[in-house]
Length: 331
Image 1 (cartoon, helix red, strand yellow):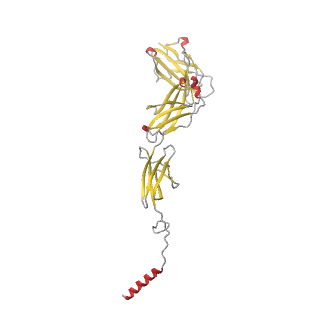
Image 2 (cartoon, rainbow, N blue to C red):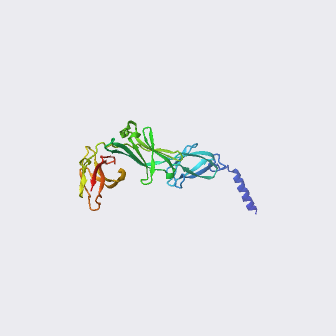
Image 3 (tube, rainbow, N blue to C red):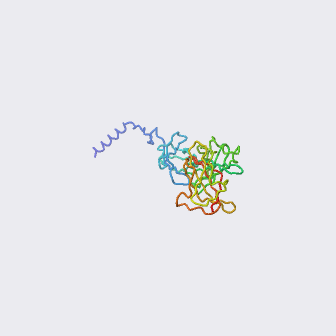
């Protein structure tokens, strides 16, 4: 018993002689270098959806440190001092999101943030049209089409415009083509010509419900076709009447140097001059100057009545110039 008491006394004396162990661990509350820290993890999603936003940058504004979301939209800050921190979340084509979090010592805070994506123009094009006619003069117009979507869903789109210089023209959505479209006459432009558009950078401007705006990369008019082909037979000047079948459509080629094909269209004239297209043949080679009708046994013969036909010159981009209508009668 006395031996045990003596051993305990010696141990106490030795401990009393040892200096305090230094506390230099910043996680040790007894250390002079101890810092009250916490952590923050979060998830960034597309507004109105559950899809994570990959590659978004989250910056702790006051600390000057940043992290990037992973492929699922997750991020984390491992060590943050306690107190209120301000953060900003950024990603190209998304609206910035600024938020604050109160970081507590030893606590892992969590946040869920959503980003509003601006509309995205996937494609756009403008095609020029020339319709030759006997009176009053050739008709010129352009057709614009744009494929526009929105990260937050199609219903988030509010307006889509075609922009040329300082002019803006609204575009309408077509469920058939799934594009926004607009048809503009030459009278819509200064100088009363579509040639005014040539060389100008054109844009598609779109806006969503949160007023996020996207301006597309510039695109341009590729060509206005002035010289077209000319129908020669059947011709209204010859009072041509078709009595037998098959027969041939004939034309003279345009004086141009670019690549092109022909599109031949035949329409029947119904009551009150209304036309109904009965046959179209597109992609006809540029060296061709005649087309037999019917081209094969699968095309029915034309029924007796009044008809018109046109021949269009179509370039590789889709611009075209259509000839004057040439009429004929089938008996």
